[in-house]
Length: 351
Image 1 (tube, rainbow, N blue to C red):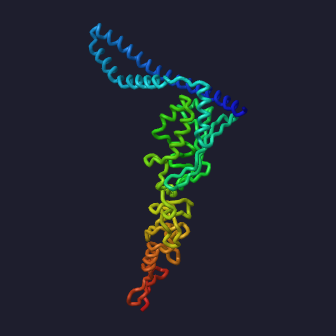
Image 2 (tube, rainbow, N blue to C red; image 1 turned 90 degrees about the horizontal axis):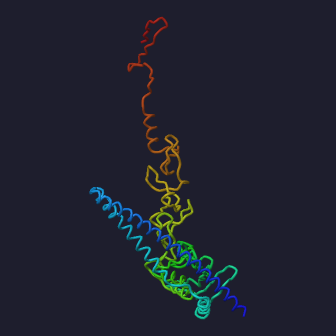
């Protein structure tokens, strides 16, 4: 008896939510109607201007009016078509309370696990464990938030949660090829799912979502099943298997083989961004295996510096400087004669 009363309360909550959704739908039509009316008003003004220009013989002005109307025809057609689509799609009336009660009873009979929470105003259906191409994803909970149904045209009023998650290796938020951050990619089922909520066909709503979860569409997955166990490269975003993934010990991120390298001195794995290319030998090295030249202060790998801490160019420059003759030399002739000056300005020559 208590369960029966609770289902009646739930049915009333759903009926109230559908009334609010209907109101939102009518507001959409109102907005579209206003847009179309503005275009009709502009067309009426142009009609009067065109008539006045013809009557007064202002042929140039009449041609300008026609030119403007011609340019606006596409906009006019768009708003007319938009209004027709919204108005015609709203022909379905609201279900009765007994219809909603019947829908909830049908959910209880046809779907494996069904529960509702009057306090949170939610209806939940738990699927059987799902396996796609031998990859287990476990059961999912499909939870419809009754208080969010009126936001159907702006946001999804339900969430799909993995109860035993086996997320993609590249993104923990993707718990199913068609579920990311608890949001289902509805694909071709988008219109049907929305229409089922508008018409109060809640059993069909849950059934369609379960069907999408049990099916893999290779054309529109968040992450394909082939890449499910992979890891996303931090640099290029490609998904690679664990065996083809390289961990940069400098920035602590994962990279593919094309975006990684290793230090030629200590074999440390590096990404291309953290590796430093020595300007002398052009080999990639890590920061720990580099040092500055004591002369030019340019950074080199330690293998390209001398024991004195000089790069090759600075070492060669030092040798060249040491081989040059001193600028100040004694005035000694090749014959061994030394010429000196006395304090009186006279020259004394010693044989």
